[in-house]
Image (tube, rainbow, N blue to C red; front, side, top):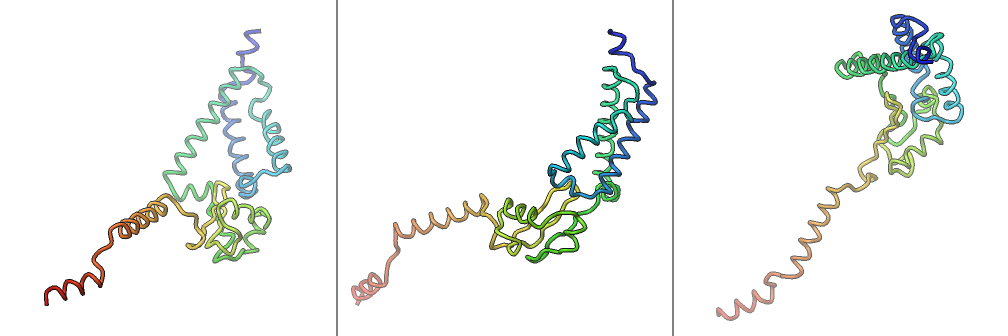
Length: 200
């Protein structure tokens, strides 16, 4: 039993090559498939992702069901992924090649239908994304873009942005200054005229 758990069915070198090849194939397929699969997972996308992991399993491990083989394959995956992430972060050109570039879906408060169609997203989902990030509708945005990682980034116009801590702090400071002025008013026009009359 112990031998079955720890004995890999294929050489570790072959397992490493299989893992790396499958990693790059999946990366390429997701890259060609577009960012929509990363931006949101509906029922269909979830089914595809679950089946995809099952489909490529045998290509990675071959006839190996051992614990040591699975641990080795997982380690190779993590190492390859870490190396690619570091390479992408250190080289902007390689990062763009690997992940792509942002796609602008709306500009100056108007959707760009051609870009939305190419990205495979629905207007209803995009409207929800705008509302989740503080806007009422696309007319309140400056840009809406689909980022390389699949997230939707909404830029709101200045009058429609939510107040942040610095805005609240500035407002409190103004209120405190007004309260101080009301609590200790300076000499008014009547007091000036009185002083003038006294000097005469």
